[in-house]
Amino acid sequence: MSAGILVLVEHLKGAVADITFEMLGAARQLAQASQAPVHAVLVGKDVAGLAAQLGAADAVIVVEDAAAELPSTELVLAVLRQLLEQKQAGLVLLGGTNVSFGLGVRLAARAKLPFVNFCKGLRWDNRALVCTSQLFGGKILSDVRLPDGRGVISIYPGSFPADAGKSDKTPPVERLAAPAVQSKVVFRQLLEPAAGDVDITKQRVLVGVGRGIQSRDHVQLAEELAAALGGAVCASRPVIDQGWLPLSRQVGKSGLTVKPRVYLALGISGAPEHWEGMQNSECIIAINTDPRAPIFDGAHFGVVGDVLELLPLLTEKVKARKT
Ligand SMILES: Cc1cc2nc3c(=O)[nH]c(=O)nc-3n(C[C@H](O)[C@H](O)[C@H](O)COP(=O)(O)OP(=O)(O)OC[C@H]3O[C@@H](n4cnc5c(N)ncnc54)[C@H](O)[C@@H]3O)c2cc1C
Image 1 (cartoon, rainbow, N blue to C red):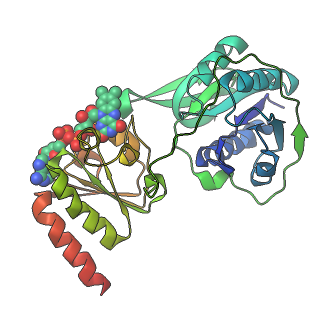
Image 2 (tube, rainbow, N blue to C red):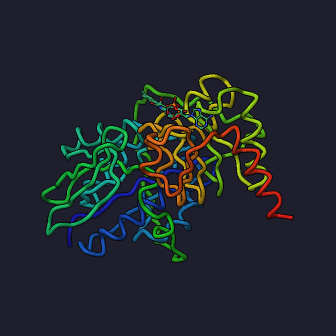
């Protein structure tokens, strides 16, 4: 049997994050070929109840700590290091998210394992694990070979199907006492998006606006189309920087990663930093006045035209269809 796989469970306010299921699905697939056991590692305050959702793992290891409302990096590092030894694990999957950034490199250095960042694909090649990483905002895909399949891998969100990591099975649960750690970082407060704002990562339809929308007043045109389609408006960074929409609507490298059924890119050039955050949308429709705009290289459908002219017409058509 090959060395086991540890998957660090990400959760917030009593809900398991999608990235966890993506990682469990990827781990399951790897385990199929290697026969390695998959352990989900659940660390936090009063988190044991979440274990029931992690049936895709062979076992869930629960580490509860009353002080770990948001577990500190030091605590998670200590837990993972202990488990690497105890479970004779060789592979650790972490989410490439704000929660786990900074964890992977430190774990890899301390455990003397290689670290792979921005991983979007995993496959066995005999005993070697080949990890495909996305570099330079998606311009380059690079294969990194881990000869003995051991390493710490940070998974790029949205790269693996979350459904593959969901199961109705009840996994066995093991408890581990929280190791005593001296953390220099203390959790103080969770800052949430302004009340009443939508979560763009959960929308089926997104109307994305870029600098081509030209003014704050025109954003209303996109709001009307989004309302007609039953979706929400999001934006590229320049629109957010101008203050035309709140930060919670930013898509891209320094914003959120979205994966709606339909993403309308209106007056968005398709810079790698934006593309990175919406490239996994099921259907991308771009409208841009510039036929050479990079967004057209990846969009499924494209219209060369003026968004300010087309937006009201589109809204009218959608409303007419509905009635
Ligand atoms: C470290 C870093 C992080 C970044 N993070 C992000 C991020 O998270 N998200 C993000 O979006 N960007 C991010 N950026 C910025 C990114 O590089 C681009 O500058 C940005 O995405 C461009 O936004 P845009 O497409 O709206 O604007 P532009 O690139 O200026 O494109 C505007 C487009 O609108 C078209 N247009 C103009 N008028 C019309 C019209 N009337 N009708 C139709 N089309 C029209 C133009 O042809 C053009 O293609 C980041 C950059 C860096 C360096």
